[in-house]
Length: 508
Image 1: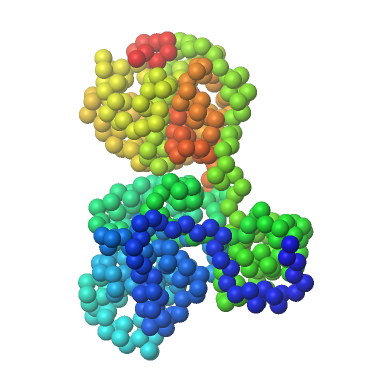
Image 2: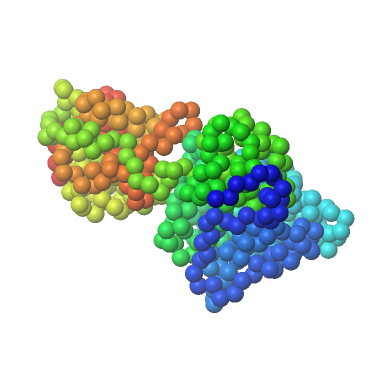
């Protein structure tokens, strides 16, 4: 166990290595030194930890394509991510033949910060060679239209994601800062535009997510890299190690908000630029005023302990207690697409005199238990005008909601029966469905495997403003089935429509 009695040893430790380092498979060459050399020529000498990231990211396969199609970086704030972004962007424009490079952040001020850093380099007195490579009149400074255009036809653009809906991000190299708040809708749209590029590379850079962050995308990219599911991803993570004896030694001081050598040591271990650009007194103030959880996430790079672990909000006994046979009543249908867009859940809810009952309209082991088959839903509802038996069909999931709506209309389903849930309605359905299961007003049919598997791994994930939504802590997309159930329940509870006749259960 390391016990430091003064801060002097920390100053002698150099840079902390990454706690997690994942490199892609298949690299035969590496261009990281080209990036570092160009940056140094422009007057910006990269730190060792930044070069470590480049080594993981810039490997090339035999066919001259990037081995890492996705590069993930998580490091506490103020360590120097913006400098790395600009170095990679310049290399793309001047060395790698990339015609469009986009640096994006969630908010405009963060995107503008990266643009300002590039302009400092371009305008430096020693960089006349770089200014000669900028196209005359090629510097655009209008808000949210910032860009630098080069004489060789390359462009570096700076964009904010908020309000953009994932539009305008088609590029050879896309660098997404603040990736811990990259929404699934924007991510789905971005992937569809990048898929047409011959040799794309997407960077996701961020910090350990806060409880209120919409971090599903960042978490899934991290999990795919660390668990070895992706062979074309690089992942570099700096953060304190909860399992280390050093962290155990510092934990009592963290809980009592005391700045000690033990605390400074784990801060060093989580911040690779600790000895280069960190203001220790500011961090000390954070330690003395933040909660241990907030300080852990913000400064120590600690991901939530529930990340990567299976958990559930509805207990097994609570779910069993809600079992009941199907009954007569007025039926509504809910369709939910997972955040990743890979799984579709379909569930019905029946309103009867004593409450509500939920069930799946398909065999729980059928193809819809783990795939997106929009055509099947449309055909099923169009058959014998089955859609008329439902008071309303509610759809949620930005990856496919509009596609399904149009497919249903093309199949003959009345527009008035189809409703695309708003974000607020989705959050409302989650809390309403959960409370209804607990208080017994919502029951479900026993033995629906897809729904039971969904409930077994679905936990709540906090959203801004106190709202929450379902999140799968198991296989990607499994939350879709419980989301569909909750949407159907909310629809059955709130709609005033009445279909032509009542039916028992979900007639196939």
